[in-house]
Length: 72
Image 1 (tube, rainbow, N blue to C red):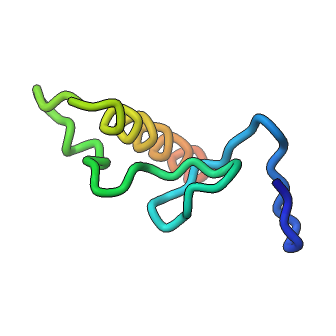
Image 2: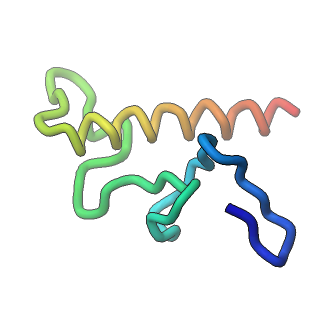
């Protein structure tokens, strides 16, 4: 996927998007209207659906990426 503004996402690669992004080729946003934030899964409150599991892993990866940019 490429756009006139210079963003180029190679085939087979993905960008992590937040809820403001539409689901498009190369962009992985979380599922809407599904639990997302890490604190919603604390304790024994495990993901119950595939969408919740995806959102849990999406949130975890997003936090990791944000911390890496913060460290730079």
